[in-house]
Image (cartoon, rainbow, N blue to C red; front, side, top):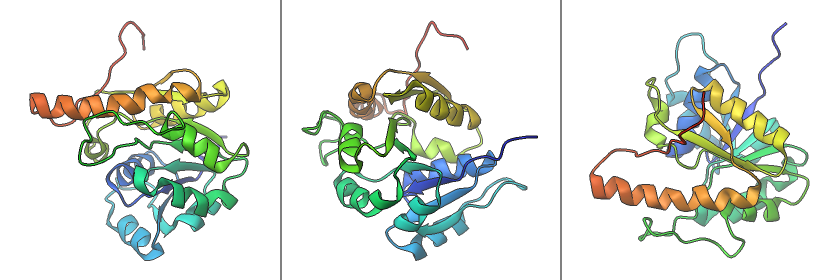
Amino acid sequence: MTAAKPALAIIGGTGALGSGLAHRFAAAGFPVIIGSRSAEKGREVAGELVTPPGSVKPLGASNEEAAKAGEIIFITVPWANQASILDAIRPHVGGKLVVDTTVPLVPPKVARVQLPPEGSAALATQHRLGSAARVVAAFHNVAAHKLKSAASIDCDVLVFGDEPKDRDVVIGLARAVGLRGLHAGPLANSVAAEALTSVLIGINRAYKVDGAGLRITGIWP
C-alpha cells in the first residue's frame, strides 16, 4: 500500500515562490494549503493555479489555518514580514517540520548580501518558533517562475538542518518535484545559500539571464 502524502502548508503561498512550490507539489500529488494573511486571497490564488489533470487541487486559507492543517509547513514570506507571520503561526507548528525558504533581502540593494543579527533568516525562524518546531532551510536558490513550468529546472537544492532525518524528508520533497536535494549540514550553514541568493541576483543582472541556478559537481546522481 502506498503511504499517503503529507499535507503541505505554504505560508505566504500567494507570492511568487510560494505559489510556484504549491503548483509543483500539487502536480506531484501532494495535498497543498496556500496560506495568506487574507483567507480570501489564499482561496483566490489556489483557484487560479493551473495543475495537470488528475492532480490534487490546492486549497486556500489564512496563514494560521494553513499552519494548523498542514503536516509540513513551508515559510515563503518576504523577510520584512517574517517575524509577524511567524508569531501568528507559532501556536500551530509545535512538533512539525518547518521548511524555511526565506532570504534576508533588503531593498533596494537586493544584490548585496545583508544578513540578520541571528546569522541567517533560518536561524531567526528557529529562534522565533522555539525548539518545538523542527526547522530545515531549503529552496533558496530556485528561480520562482521556473517552478510554474513543466520543464526541468537546472538547479540543486541545498538542504540545511540539525537533524539528518529531517533533511532527508526535505530532500525527498525536492526529488518529488524534479529537483536534486543535497545534505548541506546544520541549520547554521543556511547562511551560505541565503547569501548566495543575492549573488545570483547580481549574476542575473550582469549576464542578462533569467534565473541563474546552482549546481554541485562531482556528485551522482
